[in-house]
Image 1 (spheres, rainbow, N blue to C red):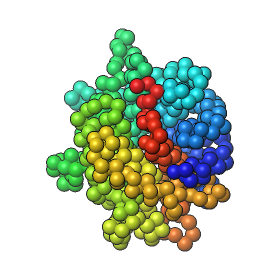
Image 2 (cartoon, rainbow, N blue to C red; image 1 turned 180 degrees about the vertical axis):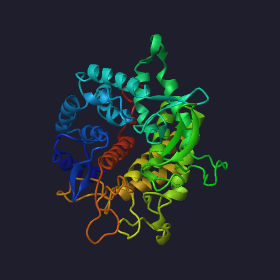
Image 3 (cartoon, one colour; image 1 turned 135 degrees about the horizontal axis):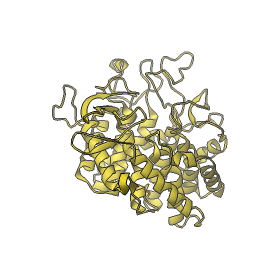
Image 4 (tube, one colour; image 1 turned 90 degrees about the vertical axis):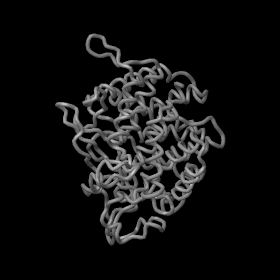
Length: 414
């Protein structure tokens, strides 16, 4: 972990804060990809993670400066489901560090206001379902419930803990914890498969990237996917978001639905999704997997399907958190296995000329957005902003297990 943070320092300082959010690397250089600006909080938040792990003040100064310069539009962004990614990773980190006594109080007032507003704006993206509950809809529109959003629900949790509510029509006070809980329950119900024969492809813990609803009557219509191979296979980064999102929410608020969703998704990852070294290929239904030995360590240089190291970095933290919270050592050991793999070559980027930190991440395989190098058949060798961020966050989590306090997204407000 210390080696990783030593490499991380130069990569953060070498990445310029320019117009457009860096998304993934091409030939080792970060480039923007217009879709939504969902990765900017990871870029800025990386500096704050680096300070947290190393105590180097220049990274605190950088994170503080760029939060003030870049992040305000994300606080009031009404068009995305990414508030927990962008704002908890920046304003939330600043508030947490101040409350832990690691920094002075200069950021507290601005961060507190930003986090309150962010949680309310996120909660306002609401579609009602037929049972009178609802979900936070994705940027695809009111019909769309993304599995990704479960970790972005951190914004509602923090705002609630700060005493905030969403004000609706006629001054209705909408409870943010209740809205978070309803969203999480519907994600568990419609995006996480229960293993009870709901359809012909129902395996416990499998996830669908998207759940689609009829917005006229709120009825569930079908599973869907944007970045996976099919609605009836498991896009492994979506699975990882569910693993970590539900485990974190369980730490924040005890709920049996959160617990079962976390258990089911973590079990599926260990039993079906990950290769022997803990790294998954990008989708469990990808057709090229028929040519690969899934009982062996993952091979990022194979000729058939790409691995997704970013999914592994996210999943590892979910396994570790769930294992610690429930006192189940095999989840902790699984998380440590994944971490050990990612913190070494060929996943850890040791080349100072490569701007990425975690190699062999993929973004959008169906759209063909990821670089395929000459002589290769599938994407490999490149990085993503969320993969780099979550490797750093995984490292910080493990460091704090050894030298506390325990790291949570709600550490500044609990």
